[in-house]
Image 1 (cartoon, rainbow, N blue to C red):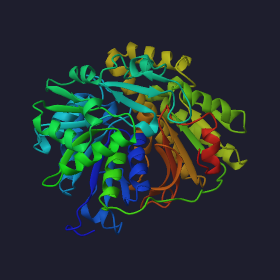
Image 2: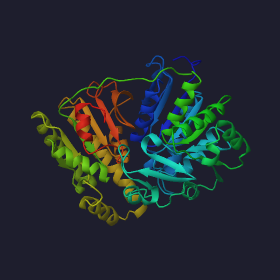
Image 3: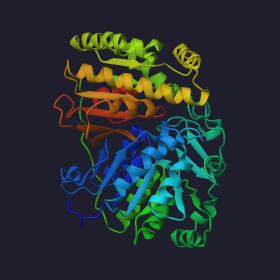
Image 4: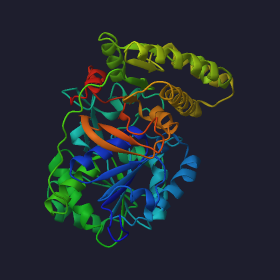
Length: 460
């Protein structure tokens, strides 16, 4: 890619599953997109002729505000150098965040400084994933596919009890106000319904530092995308929100004939056996584990003693041996840290870290970091021993750390599986990881037969 070929969009994903979510909706819209797992240089982009958008998969959702400053300032500056039309700080569609971890307000403050932008635009809705923002209140379907019941986020059975960032407030303007001192306002549905001209006028008359946008359906996203695109004509526009922003911009770009037709993919077909690495404690993932075990998968429980660094070497060696043995007899294997929020390993881990003097706010964050790293180290050792063609990572926080242990430069989407969780191909200079098919799914993603679908390479 030559410097004059301006990128349509650059995004930073606050975890890996969310990053592949954005990758999917850009790719399906017909935008050639590559997701990098480390800060890219121009020579990295040049490896992908015709590239139109890039992402950087990050871990800021599991970081403290000080860690976010150390991570995001250089990452944003690096990505700003590519001079894209849009820069998107991509967050989970359930707006997972808290003052002490994954602070979206802190990301907004950093982005406002880096991009010299007075008002930061925030669009949380993702109706294609069952996420709706109505008069500032976020509602989410149970799961991201099917006919699950829809709850206000603070009453959602899973998100209201999330172990790291429980949703305690449905009004996102109030939720975010606990994370930043910036002034916050909202363009609600009554204005969105009037169309882009009225929304653009409301943006121009706005005085707040942070401006939320309601959204309930694809027409609303189309309006938001049109407004965002009009605001990005002179300089890079910094925005925050779900993959609904990618979908909104894709709709606007198509209408304005900036991009062509949507992309269609052929099913990849079955690859057996596969390896599943689950750090999720979601009830959705728990049902998927149960279903897979009833249909031929084997399981290995990563015991809570793996949290102790003195035990990790022996634990890793033992589990690698078990996985290799399972693969040698053709058995797909699930390595999991829990099978639901009531798994006793969760309490055991918390008690261990508390006994070490760790404060409550730091315990869950460290769980994701430590267990994710162990899962990644196990995978690395397995890959050196047996040939694996497809890996499934379940759980946004842990998968970010697990994938970081592998020497992956970038990911490209190769097929859809479930909305927000595509099948990707790993690109690496290391032959033992290059070309491996990978799927990253958040805890809420997918139906009970999800692992089987990934095994067979079929779309839900």
